Image 1 (spheres, helix red, strand yellow):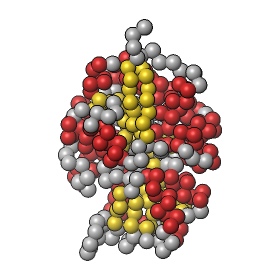
Image 2 (tube, rainbow, N blue to C red; image 1 turned 90 degrees about the vertical axis):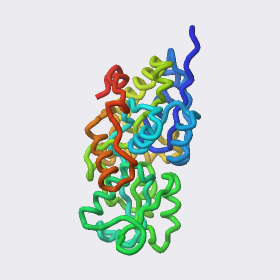
Image 3 (cartoon, one colour; image 1 turned 30 degrees about the vertical axis):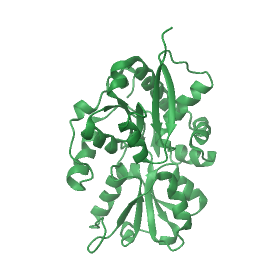
Image 4 (tube, rainbow, N blue to C red; image 1 turned 180 degrees about the horizontal axis):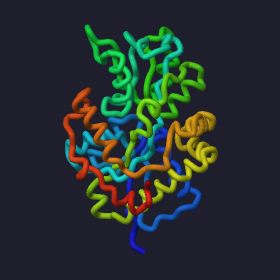
Length: 310
């Protein structure tokens, strides 16, 4: 039997990447055996270290923010989007000590976001813009965004006794973690601002796609099945997710069931129209991305199609 291809996938401990955790669990239990793929997952504490590892060829693939992946493609074109890893799944949390009742109450406050190249930046900007509020630092600006690694957010909110931080928008489970700990309350779910929005995607280096398409296909096919498993079996998926994410089971259960469509994983086929919406907003409205990219060159949907993704 020919040697399997080692495929190193970077990810964060967020429910946006839960489908990877499900696949790893299937491998560990012997429920799934790859013919071509030797899968190795590498966890990162933040988005910039993950992006740097991808650029420096320290990993072969990544579960990564769609806008950040687009920016990397603009820089070097070395990785292509092959699958969405979820839809929806983020939340805006108001710090209980900041007295936030409406969007205007964020005026004069800090809002934590995971990255400027993120759906979170887009969604919160859209909410503020609807009320005529501006983002930035200095005179004439209403709200300050501070980029914070997702895993660091709960501790920041816990110790912000004066309510200097109005709140945050981030991928679950960190929102639910803060709510269950009693330090924050839900202000809005991302799905209610932009229904069924994309956020994180799976990108794979071109070299890996060219060298071992069979291995890439096995990974994509497994992730699609894992997404279906989460959708159909939220409680067992929460048990697996708690171990994968280092969270209490109750936190992950809340993400997957309250409401059931807070995060969805059944529809992972890449959506070019949604990606176009992202890049138009992030280049023309808030200028977070350097420039638009050719989505036809960035997205390779063949693996998703072969896997039966919808």
